[in-house]
Image (cartoon, rainbow, N blue to C red; front, side):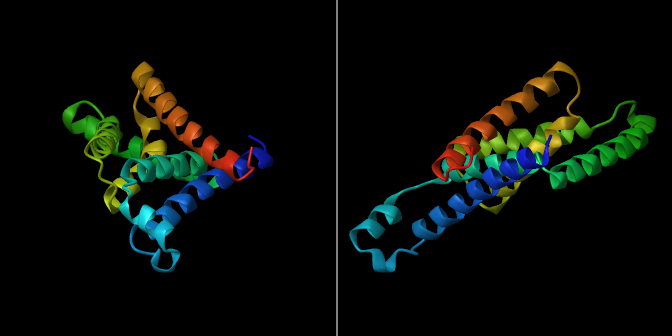
Length: 162
C-alpha cells in the first residue's frame, strides 16, 4: 500500500469517526441555538449509524502504519497465548476472543446500542478478526472490510476524499 493510499484510508476513517462525534454532539443536546433544526437532531436516534461509522474508522485505521502495528501486536499476542494454551488445552483460543468480539458487536447492532463498549468493539473488530483461521476467518475479515469500506467510502465521498 502506498503512502497516498494509507493517507486516504486514514482520512476516511478519521472523517467517519468525526462525523459520528458531531452527530452525537448534536443528538445529545448540542443544538441549543439551532431552533427547529436542533429539535430534528434531538429527536433522532443514530445508534447503528455510530457503530457503522466507528467500524469504518477502524477499517480506515487498519489500513495505515498504525493499523499494521496494531495487527502485528494482536498477531504476536495470539501466537504467544496460543502457544501457551495449546500446551494446556490442545488448541489456541485467539480465534475465540476475536469471534466473541464480533458476536458482541453484532449484538450491539441488533440491540441498537452504541455506548462506549460498542464503539470500542467497532474500532477493535477490524484489527482482531485477522486471527480467525481458515476460510471462515477470510470471509469474516472480507465482510467487516466491505462494511467498513463502504461506510467509509460514503463518508469520504461526502467530504471529497476518494
